[in-house]
Amino acid sequence: MTARVAAPIASVASALLLSGCASFYEVTIESPIQAKLDVAAYQRVLVAGFVTGGSDDVDANLETVRLLRSQLRTKSGIRVIEADILPLADIAQEQARASGAAAAEAGGDQPGVPQEFPRIRDDKDLAAYEGIFANVNYWKKLGEEYQNPLIVTGTVRFTPHQRSGFVTREQEVYDQLGRRRVVPVRTYMERKGYILRPKFVFIDGRTGTTLYSESFREEILYNASQNTPALSSYFELMDRLVPNFLNTLSTQKIRGTRVLLK
Amino acid sequence: MRRFPLLVAAIVVLVLGVASPVAADARKDAKDQVEFGIAVARKGLWKEAIYRWQRAVEIDPTYAAAFNNLAIGYEQQGAFEKARQAYEKAVALEPDNLLIRQNYDLFKEVNDRSSRSTDR
Image 1 (tube, helix red, strand yellow):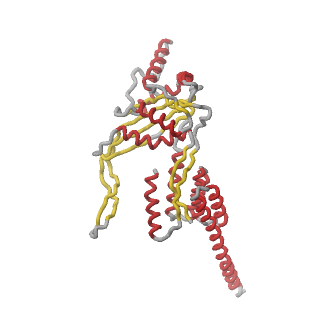
Image 2: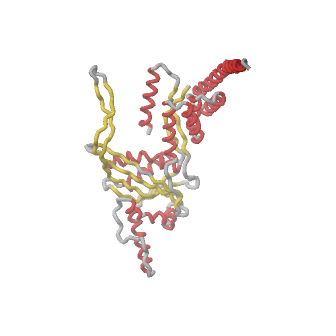
Image 3: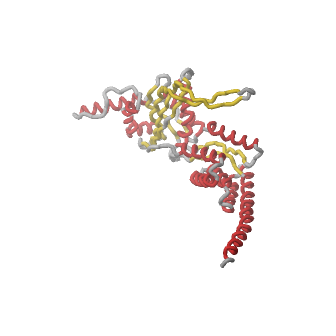
């Protein structure tokens, strides 16, 4: 974010400086963004696990839990519970099958419970697993096991993506006198990358009910010839939305640069 | 009756003659407040800076730079609604000022991040 807007500011600032006008001052500010959720009632947080889908190149459940735990440990005041990571997709399937079997035993047919769970590729596939977040008894039981913490769970889809089209990129050109200029050039490019779609669900470990949920979407594209490891892309995309995740639980300060004028 | 236009012209000249120095004085006073505000803001004393810039916009409500600085001060304090109003005023007063626009764009980016789509 900062880099994208810092360049124009710097260019305007240097232009003004060169013109001999110094009627402005660049300052760094830290804007406090209030926490979205009041977590005063919880002393501890359990990042339980995630239902994940998409690329096989990254274990999104393992990586997301590890990353969020480490971020919460260093950037929030709440204590993080170290526990085994739950294979939430498997648990969701078991729960759905169990409730389907119970309904069949009772003589009825429970609609909406699939016999075979699909491999998670899109939102439709993911919908089959969403029932687990509404299973109040399951989360309450898990909460009791860990002395009623705030539970963080949800879904993460990390999918490969490719797109082709015209993009504008900067190109260096030199004139007859050898002076360097940078000019925008539109070129047709094949690009590939990833889309990260996490949904964070915050559950009250005392009651098992969902307190809050928030969905994000981040995308990154590289030149098709560039070989970027999936894990690097995953962390690059998570880096963009982690401050927003942390802001759900604690007040965060966003640093930025502004220009004061005379 | 023929003297009436002359009288009006004389009044206009008189008013302009008095008003211009008054406006200039207001801008000078406001500018002093703005400069003091900048000096203290650079030392991290943002509340004092905000107070100075508030005084500046009271003295001269057409001073775009004062509104710009006030908006930055509010932003630093987390008063985003006030910051938005001050930025909008600054942009309205000087729509071609690139630095004010850049500040406002940055503010909007931070503010949008904090209020991005949520579902409960």
